[in-house]
Length: 474
Image (cartoon, rainbow, N blue to C red; front, top):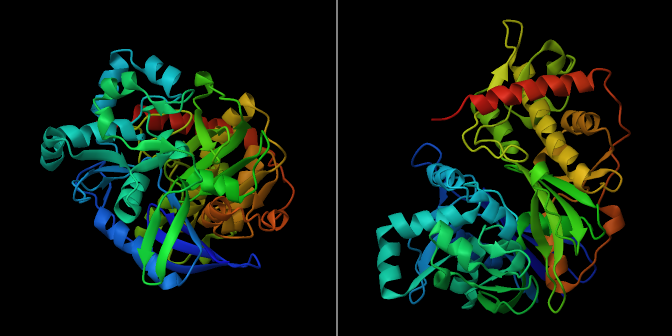
């Protein structure tokens, strides 16, 4: 038996394959173009994404089942009859709806979204993006008038186009700000509040089950799982007990902690209750989520500025931590997520001097991402104690300096994944029941080596965050 897991992410589409022995391999990966038509806007070409998924499936050969992981909050419009995309994908990073969100906050509507969806008002989530599409894209407005408009996250588009099933799973629906988290149904009040026509939304189904079949060069293959990429990584890590937590350091850094059958809604901690997954025929499993919008994106930005050429240059530094010299970077390049939730905040460098070389600037970026992750972990631990060490994956989990600094900042052991593709592994497990060798997934990086001044350093970082929050993008 061969099972394929597709990870359709922010920058690329990848396909992982597991054989009957449980051996895993990345079979293919294709990057896609990022579009930035205006300040704060981030878009993808939906036709390119569809073509890349199809290409991955054609390359991988004959498989028995497919699972698909999606970007989460990214969304678009398409036609119910022709299945043609009517808009570009508006990516989760996009902040074009800031003013709409601020108006809703001014009208006192955030209490409604917190009570019903568990989510704060923020342009990060899909609801305001879908409303913007319905109101501003001429082809979407025309389709709405004739009754053929479909709105949804990317998973629903992929499935409708490739299998003919207009559905989304509960984990993805929980990222929209339109799902009633307790009923696991679209909430009429929230849809009306945001201006999203509820009749245009997909049916909500469990994470595993019958999602139809995709035709490939090697035959027709059933799709048996669909889930948000971060939840897939949580499942891939083997997190099943309350308090099990992980952070994936990709374009952004996203922490998830299993809370079981409990919906932990703690607005004071600014964390997000969300559906982790719902297996077919079973009750949903819930989680808490907190996000850092710019993680690897900050490192890639630094490389684009010429601060370094190769990742091998920034795995160790001869100098002490940059924060020790007063150099601080807040990675708010696309706003601040948990626990601040301010899309207008912007990145800041503080403490620059003529003594600082490019390497110290990069060092401060790595430290800034670690400090932001520590903010999220602190908030999580106050809601529910985290079990043992912290599991991490993603590109930055391979950087020794970053991993050790993160361990010091959160004062607990950090366990990078020995397998690089936890999202693909998770969706394969969900698609097939394949359990793998979970005990071999997590490496032990090393014991915490407390820095004498770490609390002082974190205080300095908080001072820098306050400046980031006050330095608004108007």
